Length: 360
Image (cartoon, rainbow, N blue to C red; front, side, top):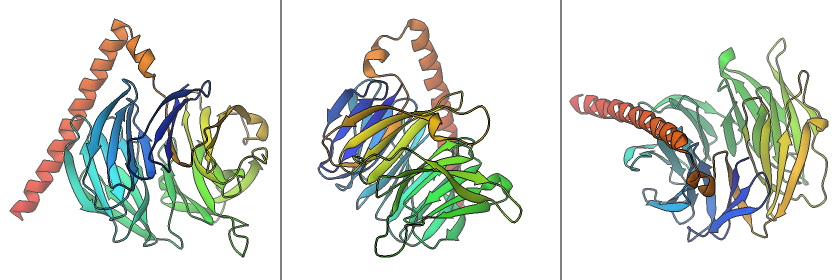
């Protein structure tokens, strides 16, 4: 069922079991507010905070792994690149690529001239999108650490993510959701928040793909909309199709995270500023658009903390890891060996490029 990892304003991390809503762990690794958290498929957890540090935790084994200190300001972005690498971004505008086997710093470069707000690593591990307060979105070639493209935007993107197939990129700002279809040559669909202007402006906060052509968007009033990506003549469009049932106790949404299974279903969590966490299940319909009936609320948890960010890990818990059979352990070792080989190849590519630069 997975684990929902919650970052708090007081520097703490809390884990909730998605299947039952029970607390799995809790500790306070940061001296300041936790601004970002991410989990790898293998159970590594990384959190960035206002104390300028990245703290590391092994969810599968239930132990701390240490800390990374390379940024000169708040670390507001953390993202795993498969099981091999970790990418961090900060208010200092710098991006760092770390190797997960020993957390050696492989590459450090200036991604933006101003504070980074979010980033999204493509599932291939070769491409990354980043956004900053300079109202720009940049695409990066992670194998070389070079900029592949830069796109100016009207508002700074606060959240970005790739679709399950990796063919579409969604970028969310306070009043706009933009979905770029990379497979269609960069065709973009835009949805503007009808309550995103005026004296009573309500900001959009978080977005997640429900399916390849549908997204969930949460806002500052606690409303959660379903948007559908629809191709049409003259360019694609984003339209609202339905909303999750209203809840008077659901206040400002801070984060929506989740994980798809092999059948296209989605288990996701909605976290609010009051510390309330709702765990939902989306069952993909056989055909047609998603409706309210496709969503089922499984649990509600009042954590009592000031929630700032969340991540979702679908792996086994520390207790389940201790009960792995010899066959499971052998398969895990094989996966670790393959991941290590991928890391060696990526490291060799980076070193080759550095040597070429020195020769020039």
